[in-house]
Amino acid sequence: MTDEKMNQLLQETLSSEMPGEQLNRNIKRKMEEMGMKKRFSMKKAMIMAAVCCLLVGTVSIASSGVVSYIVSSEGADVFTEFEQLQQAEQKAGFQVRAKENFDNGYLFQEVNVSETKDMDENDNVLSTYREIGFIYEKSGEKVYIHTLRSENAQQDMERKPDNGIEIAGINVGYYVDTYKFVPTDYVLTAEDEANMQRDDYFISSGADEVSETKVSHVVWYQDDIRYSIMVYREMPAAELFGMAAELISTEK
Image (cartoon, rainbow, N blue to C red; front, side):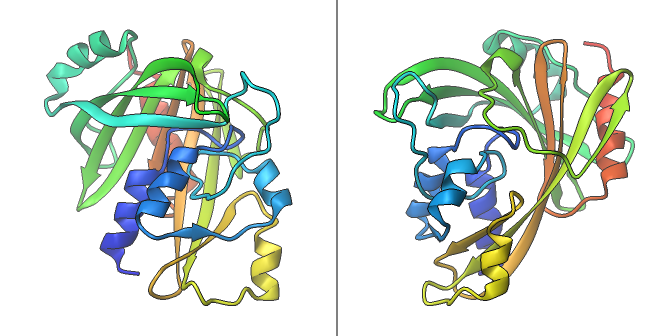
C-alpha cells in the first residue's frame, strides 16, 4: 500500500471517538469503499472501541436505543483563518480552547465544523450534534484536534491509556495504536492472532502489500468539552502532552 493511499484511508476513516467507545460503522463503510476488509474474531468485535480503530464488522447490541455506530459529515463547514474560530464556534454551538500555533512548530491550517449522528443498529438517528475539528501542519505532517461536548461522548468500555499525566488538575491519557494492512490472501500467523487479542492492534485485508502504521493521540475532558489530539505516527508522549498542556492553559 502506498503512503498516499494509507494516509487517505486513515484521514477519511478515523473518527474523533476515544478508545472505549461504541464501534463506528462509518469506519466500516469507508473501508469497504476502498476495498478494505477487517479480519477479527467475534470476541474481538464485541469489545472493540471506536476511535482510531479501522474496524469492519458489527457490534451485537440487541436492544434499540443504544448507539451502534456514528455517521459524521466531516468538514461540512471549513474556515482557513484562525480569526474565523468564532464563526466555527457559533456554528457548532459551543466554545473551545484553541491556539493558532504550537510551540513545537505545528501551524494552524483550518478549523471545521461537522455534524455527527449517533445511530442505532436499525439505522435510526438517536441524536445529532456538532463537532469542531482543527488541522495543524509542520513539514508536511498534519496533527488533528477534535472537540465536542462531553455529553455527546458515547462511552462503552474504558481502555487503560499507555501513559497518562495530570495537567492543571486534568487527567490526560496517551494512546498508541498499530494498524497492519495485508493482502486478501494473507494467512494470519500465530503472532497476528495473538496481536488481535490486544485493544491497540488491528489487521485489515485488501492492501497491495503488507505494511504497518502507528496512530498516537491524547484525550482529556475540560469545561464539559472532550479534546483529542491525533497524529499518524508514534509521536512521543511528552510532545503530545506538551501540546495538550498548551491548550489546557489557553483561555477561551
